[in-house]
Image (cartoon, rainbow, N blue to C red; front, side, top):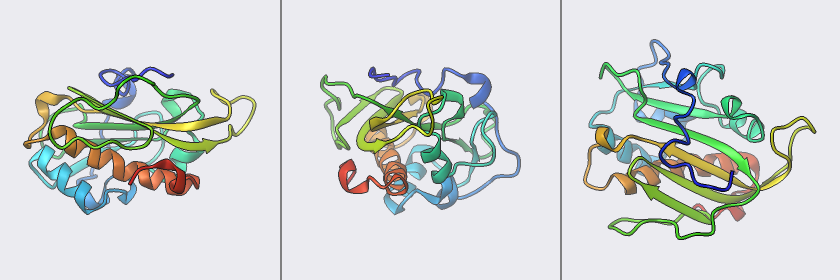
Length: 201
């Protein structure tokens, strides 16, 4: 789990991820459990070129994104973890514009993180940006709910975003993606009780 999964990490399970929830046309402020702060909302509007979206939590997870559910299932199998899928409303695509997921991890990559370029920001202990996504690892000690959990007690949480570069607008997509992922990550850290150690700004 230590390796960053920028390009495919959030898109491996296409049967789970390519499913919209009907009738969920909402503004940026209401997406992902209302975890997008004002800068993140602006970033999303720049990336999408609109302020109307659809949201899903994936075919195998009930309801829409919930911070509480996400924290409770950090140690679960991949297809049971908290996920927020954001679609551009009315674009005719069954594939999300942004695919965001959180998981517990016992380590993080030690190699260089953020690629060079304008507007780069480092979050947590490791941030990596790539053509099709962003990975952020932050300190957040969590205990496995049971001995049957997919992973035991850990010191870190991995936040990952898959977002195909070819569909994004705006002058600096990486900076906007980091703003969005950072905002949701801060909400997850607060719920998990690790905001003071997470280093998420």
